Amino acid sequence: MHVSFNLALDFDSALRSAATAAGFADAEALNPEVRVSDPRHGDYQANGVLGYAKARKLNPRATAEKLVAALPASVRETCDVTIAGPGFINFTLKPATLFAWLRAHPSIAQLRVGAATAKRDQTWIVDYSSPNTAKQMHVGHLRSAVIGEALARLLAFSGAKVVRDNHIGDWGTQFGKLIWAYKRQLNTDALSREPLEEFERLYKVGNSTAEADPAVLDEARAELVKLQAGDPENLAIWKKINDVSLAAFQRIYDQLDIRFDVALGESFYNDKTDQIYRELSDLGLAVESEGALVVFHPEHPRFKEQPLIIRKRDGAANYASTDLATILYRFEHFKATGALYVVDKRQSDHFDQLFLTAQKWFAASHRTLPHLEHIDFGTVLGEDNKPLKTRSGENIKLRDLLTEAEARALALVSERSPDIPAEERAEIARLVGVASVQYADLSQNRSSDYLFAWDKMISLEGNTAAYLLYAVARIHSIFRKLGIDPTAGELDTAATPLETAEELTLARKLVKFSNALDSAVTQLRPHFLCLYLYELAGDFSGFYNADKVAVEDPAIRARRLLLCARTLLLLETGLNLLGLRTLRRM
Ligand code: ARG
Image (cartoon, rainbow, N blue to C red; front, side):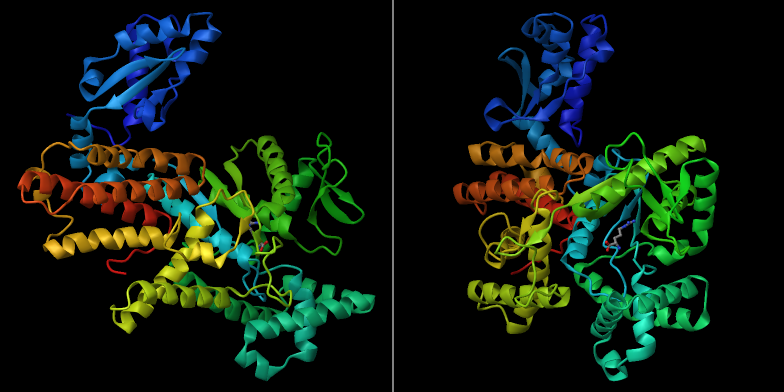
């Protein structure tokens, strides 16, 4: 029996060909809309017949009946088909189909073959983390890093060529004030001890002095213009600040297991903005306004009066100029299908205006604009429901945050598994701590604000990293005790088809991995995969509590071990796709 990775796609195409076979006049217009259904109604449901029939003044139920009658025989072999209500078509997979699916997907390589079709031949740029140098990375950049990494992995698994780009803010206005203060007030001791803190201090000095004294503001602006013009002294200071910052960011990325393909920061586009000014002016899109070069959008309720500034009055490039140059570069150099900007939703005005400008610019210059999408996310809130800050109102340092996560994870692991040697426990805690922070972020719809609550996040109960990592470790221990390798092929051949209710429930969940993956990838929302993994772990518990695995009967034992092995494979694959590392023991 042939079983596809994503069974919903099989039913989708079977219904489309049934429409032709049944002689429907405009068969190609039918979109069956096959979805995973509520388990009470079967495994998959086609909802699209209703709309199709109604639009043609046909009886939906009769239309569904005609379609079902025309389904190819192969569909009847794999599942039971029923019609419900006004014309929904339900597909309930037969145990033999579930069994065949499990046998067809024994390894990550097999899963990849199945998954790597959705985005084949596409190139996606994921622009994520993208902190600003000379400052600490804050929790917003952590959200961006965590969500962006998950999306990059999900897209790559779906067959896309992914370019992970850290669009570092290394060329902003902050450098004018910072260099101004650096030249006058640098504390070299502090610089060698806590360089990022020293840069932040200097920036604050520059900022407050400039605010109080317009002459200083002008001097700071002049420092920035000098830097942008390539002045060697300012360039050397700038380079030093960036090197130190990047090294500090790298330590966080290492903890999160993030590796960028490129880090083309704003400075990379320094020599590429002149072309932008020229093109946009020549095309009549950009105009001079109060000395600045700006783009108005007369048709837009807000942007008709609040233009996108693409060159500042003093001639300096800004966030928008480099972002426009970045779009062109991604289009020309990477031949990108699309670019995803994983950035705080508070920047949505910037991206709306940027994308609108790019649309007009590309259309007027006869280029095809790649798909540009702002992957927005909400604010991280503290337990007081306000943006997360330290008690004294400062931004939380990521390093401190991850250290605390580790300490809390250590307490959890020590309570649960006191017999694991201390050194190994510390290692487990390092992994569980980071994973908990990542997973808490990923498991919620990214567009919502998210409440940062340690107790919920680092817990063995609920939809948490620790719960899922523990499920993985538990399955490893089942195999370890029996001295069997979970990737061994013999389970597969010795197993007999599934029988008990819990075996079947678990198997029905396992085959829907592809659908969860599909939702996460098409909607670019990792929480769909998180929810699936959580439910899968729950169904596994249900099975494990009801059905003894290590029974005498070799056939029953083999099929239960087969279920264990596939659950393990999907949990590990899913968690890795989200950016988490898993454990064999915890
Ligand atoms: N550096 C910016 C910030 O910290 C984020 C950059 C996002 N990427 C982009 N292409 N604009 O807010």
